[in-house]
Image (cartoon, rainbow, N blue to C red; front, side):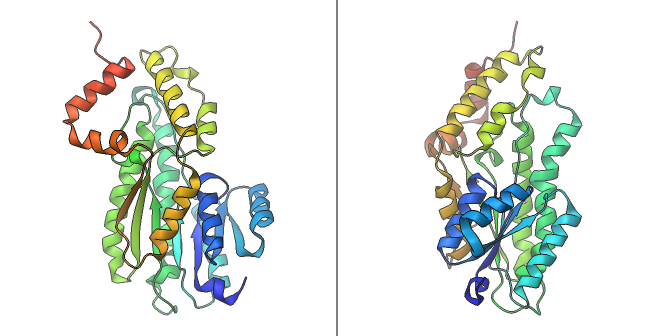
Length: 290
């Protein structure tokens, strides 16, 4: 890694595929050095093979606080007295299913990654971004990858939406608290993006809900979400937006990136909530049975 690249060094979690991988590629093209977190050595090797010395893989699961802090120590040693240019909290999972038939452990697993994992990473890297006043350089920025589901809860993705709603509140509070150090916090709320997360969703075992009243609707939603995801925006579009958030002199506090902004965001906000509820219920067959 070169001295210049460390002047714009960033950490990206969940960098093996999809949005994270696209964000790595964009940052490397812009001349940054990327510390890219993955959970598997095979993914680390893949990053080294594609990006060479421009990327340093970090092996940790965001839910493992000890491992995350070890990764932060590795980055600290590489930076010396410099500050991080940015942190991208991207790692996440989606736990599907009707809430009445999900165990608390299912919700806990969702939050362990999508919220508590973000907290682990943010705390571990805060000093490198500027909370340690002895470091040199401008304070860094934190980019949080939320979702359109962070403002609009849909049936059968309740755990995911709940975690992203929580992330939105967490990010707003954090942004205001970190003004003390000059560290900005910016949220991106993507809609459907064509990433391998949809292949993973397709592999989720939804058959356990086949004997519930929700079975027909669950199947409709699963088919719809898989189709929408596979036809979604390319991850590179989000990667470009992430770099904009890190580098723009006056970024907004939140960005949306949607393939169908009218349907995905504008209409649900314009219409009365009960109207939206009824539209969804009719489409999915969730109207009350007599």
